[in-house]
Image 1 (cartoon, rainbow, N blue to C red):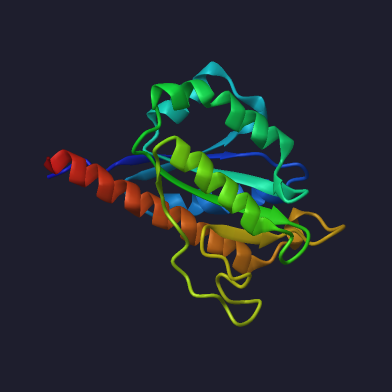
Image 2: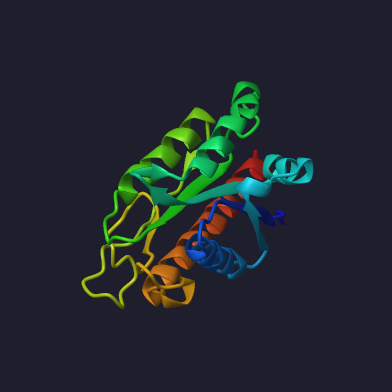
Length: 192
């Protein structure tokens, strides 16, 4: 029998709590998979212990609000700070995925997800996409119609509690999918 327990870190930045809510939903999806543990790490408060946990994780899910068509400045600082790990290929062959939020339904969220995929590719990580067809109404999963990762709308002028439930369920679906892929990769490596 194989040890299929996996660690999934959700490395995210949140400016006003909306992205934290999506990160929590993503962690809930990870936790729905037996043998998987999800942990939230805010990238603007990293310690040496956080970096060690990122290095040891089987999967890292990136999350950030979309500001001015890309990830937040705090997330960009985090990405810059991973350059030593890139050079050492410390995250090579880990699973990666991502999610983002913005006030508008589109809000250029696709660009943020593309930024995450390039970051993951530079680290030699395996990207897990969102395997959902677009929803046709607001109550459907993937109602914003993304494929690279989970997208969520942060209603302007409203707090995180006003977020669309289907966006949060979409994030949970992504977390579950990442945990399942991390387990598959762990089993494949153990079978070698």
